[in-house]
Length: 170
Image (cartoon, rainbow, N blue to C red; front, side, top):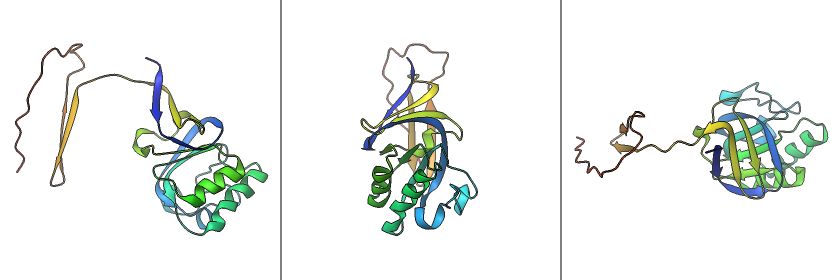
């Protein structure tokens, strides 16, 4: 198996390959991205997005925020690509008019800061370079805010039978 492929939804055409900047927040481009390509608030404050693929929850704020990406593009300070968990019209418009590839419907928690990734804004495909897909039997159960994670040992290369779980969480 090759590099890890995630299928999202393509929103703005084009391809980009770069390291990813992950911001687990909603961003208002007009108020939270400077004219120098820096994020100005939240957990990613002072992070430079120039030439990087910016992955964030989604957009918020004024429709004028679309032009923030266009201005950054005109000054060669724009991100090379955008990924959202849930796209918002203003960010999509900004990506399209600025010719920045964009994908959504991709969970942010699959990325580690600095991962080198490729996105295809036409097909919605996201590839994490150097991350290999490995099939393992894993299950997680969530009950009243508690998580139980059951993972098959990596020493087992086959799983020829079915196990029925009878677990009670109180």
